[in-house]
Image (cartoon, rainbow, N blue to C red; front, side, top):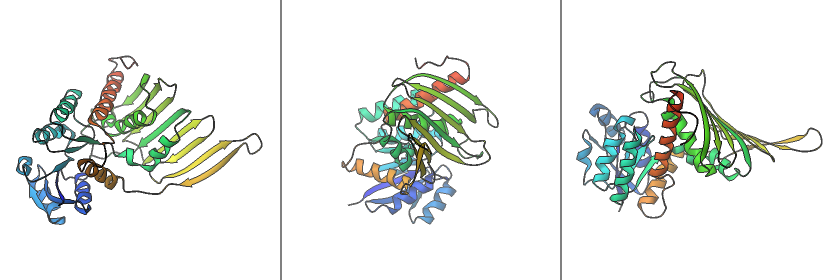
Length: 312
């Protein structure tokens, strides 16, 4: 028997979640829900499923739900389904505030109900490669830059982009942040549109995160430096150059590699399904997602001049 699923919030991103669930061999997409019933009907027609206007209408009809609505509604929606002991995958950030995120963690634990968050970059082969080669990295720079779009601009660039990178840093290095500095600008929205964060981890690794939604073109890459090699990776195309020093001219060798491309969203969806079936454990816990949100909030307080660059 197939698992029954629904997607709540089927705007630009949510409709892709619905497509992946519809295509999964172990799942039946029983419905899509959106505050705009017209949008729900449109996606439902395209995917030959049922449209719903109220999330409560899904109770008793589904085994799990994906929430891809606006950040401000994450808590209310996730809380609604967790109260019914329905497993939830909610898009990042986990909630609009730390208090809300912690309440969701508590409810998930209390009801013994799975809750995970869409930090999809953990399924990106470029960052999996970085994790596999993270030993002795002394410096890492991650660039995640893009032109301005209305979509996602309901929150700051830190909640939209930086939160991906701070989650990756925690996952890859497993070392707490000891110090940080932050600079940023509010160019279009009343929230930060462009930021640079400099981190010092307890293990000594220095990290720079550059995130912007106001650049002329999309840039997705990282540079990782260790005593043995430097890795230059395009995280979108998955093309990399690995520079290895040597004693004779030309003093370094360059090895170009191309990682195999994957459908990261399909992997994320499948992983959650396997967890629901008891065949895997969550790759991204709600507690980890909450920690990422806590760090983002600390960065914003530093940008606003309310705290110094410590993690305490």
